[in-house]
Length: 251
Image (tube, rainbow, N blue to C red; front, side):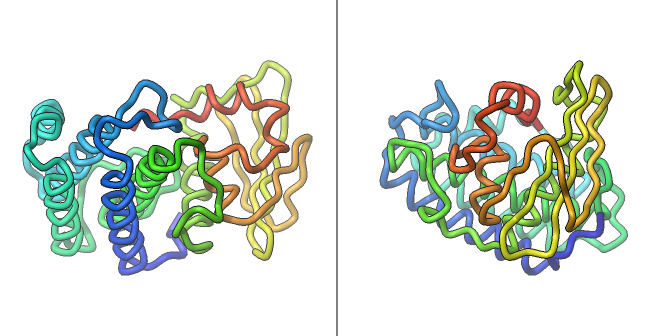
């Protein structure tokens, strides 16, 4: 999908997420546990995010990438938050300098061209991990009201998940008994209908989404819940395990 957000909007989303990430990671402390990513500390979270930023920047520039080295750098950096900021600046520069007709790795279905793909992907990657840092500062899963996230970013992130990630052949969101999930953001003209079966999920964008399970709520609450960062949308509880196991994103 050619995302409804512009390149500057994705870069602003990335910037806002980085500011939040640093704020909440500093508040929580590097040794704090991260409720939304069990078994992780804030230090590991910072190292992971900085690794992803450097990896993405290398792809955008057509340079060799070494994720393992980046991860080690993050784990041993004297000032991990400064190291995180440096990587985010490098990423933003790589996105800004990339040509519109860039040919580079794109790994989601229905994705925009490579430059726009990476701006979008890293906006949501950084936003979700900033939410993880927020959860460490709060000591619990966050709710929509706890965050800085705009409805526009949230709707775009829902679309990326439902149309890009969950429809891939590698997606684990499957069910022997067919199930249809309707996602209806309040106050928005957009919606999604996800058909889950033994085959890869099929997502349809429709303002009239309906299904066996209807998920309705604010765009930000849906964004957090669908990305497994909150339990604010209680309608998901009836098949929470299936969703959590099937929608986890590794890359």
